[in-house]
Image (spheres, rainbow, N blue to C red):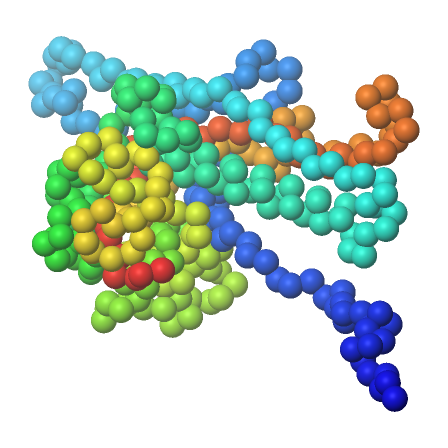
Length: 353
């Protein structure tokens, strides 16, 4: 006699389906809070953002005065205009009417969230690439052809050994190429020598990756943020300080893999992985003072600011109203204001992540 079991009557069973969504990774993006910001007014007659830089203090025109005698020279002042065209950026997500009518989760709402997160990552990457001096697309400098950087900029660059010969940086025998206490002190000292003004609280900020941060936190002098500051007064992403620099965690940091080409440091790459051996990733930590770089002011009422647009009406291209589109668009750019007011400290990492 046949026995009825869950196997013979399996058609009546279905997999249990939980409507609880799993948490997904969200980037820690921090560069916007350290930038000088300028508004984007409508009807201004241009598509570029402009900021200005006065010349540095100098004693070259100061003279010893002689009673009754007019001075022979005068002090000239200079004002440098720094401009950069805005980039219009955008993304489209399409949803069908059947999906919107039957989906278990709210795909429309999630599309708005995803557009916002993708936009933030994109704009943070543009800012990061500009500060590092790289072209978004790859191996050349910012202009995309290996030529000099915009505005005749010269980057302030260091690496954890205290040198600037990037072609030999990733040697296997380079035993001190991780971020050490001496590296941090060297970067802070460089900013002081260049007369870069500290950020909020009288300290510089250092934006770094989780891998480099894991090396720094093993330094005996490291001071966790909770030990020195009211939590409400911390920067977004702040984790601690050392030698006059507050360290800020960013999961969108810069990494590259060097060969014999000096310009390899401008090519973003995560192919090498962690470790000190040749060909492993070189991480860039940005030590920042005030007025190092600038971005548009997105909180203004400018029509160039970021917007999410939902279109769910029929038109000639969709006469049956079968599609809903969720898009974002914005104008964005980033420009280096003064390369002396920040330094790019490159290091390897003992983190194998």
